[in-house]
Amino acid sequence: MRVARLLAFAALLAALLSTGASPAAAHNVSAGADLRLAQTIAGTELTVVVKGTTRVPGPLRIGIIAYQPVTGLPVALEVRSAEDGRTVTGEAVAAADPRYAELRVERTGPHVLTLGAGGESAVVPFRVLVERGSGAELLIYGGFFVAGVLLVGGLLTGALARPGPAMAVAAGAAAGVTVAAMAIVFEPMVPPGPPDGAAPPVTALAGGGRPYVQERVATEPARPVAGEEFTLRVDLVDGSTGRPVDDLTAHHEALAHLVVTSEDGSYFRHVHPLRTGPGRLEVRLRADRPGRYLAHAELEREDSGGQLLAASFDVHRSGTQSAADDGTGSDANAGKSDSTGSDVGSDAGDSTGSDVSGGAGTGGAVPVVTPAVPVAGRPATIEVDATGPVRPWLGMSGHLIVRDRDGAFLGHVHEMGSPGSRRLRFTFSFPAEGSYLAWVQYALADRIVTVPFTVEVSAQENAR
Ligand SMILES: [Cu+2]
Image (cartoon, rainbow, N blue to C red; front, top):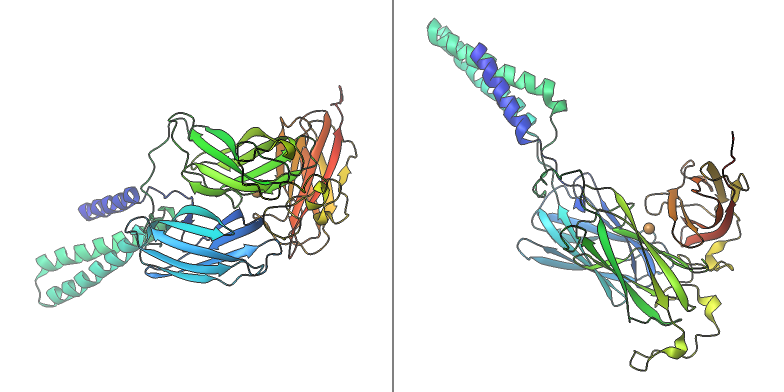
């Protein structure tokens, strides 16, 4: 009997050890979880949703949620298995409440999703995962099965009046029951096994987390011109190896959140660049006025914390443009800068971007700051009434982005109020005295609203 117990323990221990490794959580499409990724593509804000899968071969359901009025924007989809190269294609139409395209995948494991719209494309690696039964389940069913078989055998042997073997068989049955019972008791403590298709476990990272990302920001063309579209390119490089960083996790439903502002804050874009290659993110922008622009990127590497990267670039006056460039209508943009305030290549109206002077998205409601002059280092409350029913965007019902005047500081917090409420409520502690630029963003049924405002913050009182 003691031997049997020991065996049972050993079996359980083996099960515990074998299932100890948990899969990396990034870009996975599993039975329980959808992959949601915001993408700024074709001049608009979309969220790609890849529904979790329960079986392979089977359909992978992909939908494109539109946050701006782009009725009927078709998005070309391609899913390729990184293991056998098998490729399926399809199309999804961006809509506020999208219909899901079904692309059949044959296997679990690494895949690459390619999205194409408006002449741009994004390449997103992800994994198809299918849950497997846990090791404990095997022990439970196996133990009961063995016990059952042996019990019947023991009864038969006993009936034939041969006590020695009968005892041995009965002991075996008891062992089976013990294994199963222990597995039942301990199952909640056993971590679930890695699903089928999971990445091999990452060995423990020294010091916890991966090195900081170094970013290189460039524009294409190298000298962007006011009023003309350009590509902002962010190359991410591992701080220690110098290799491209290609392990970004979906952080608030995006690989990276990029906030681009003009120095004076009159230009504001919160965009979600496309991954166009390993470690490379790109987004198309258009700035109406020449000057210095700041780019702040929020991102998170797998097994590491979030990071904020900052860079700047210049937009040049259109008169100085060289003739070698594409030359698409560089003439007429000098005078009409204020009205466009919006993005690339689409008539989608304003929204992600808005000029302080009051772009289409700003809707009139002025945020209420309490206290009216916040004190540095103390929480202040910022409330704004949405102009319609709010729907979640980037996993939240509202975003508050705060920048100081010179761009050295960028803060970002989320809405704290009750979901579904039209009053958006934020708590923010301004780090130091001074004047801040701030933007509240939320999504209505058909557009993203950006409310720009400024806040004066007083110095911390010397005594309390
Ligand atoms: Cu974002």
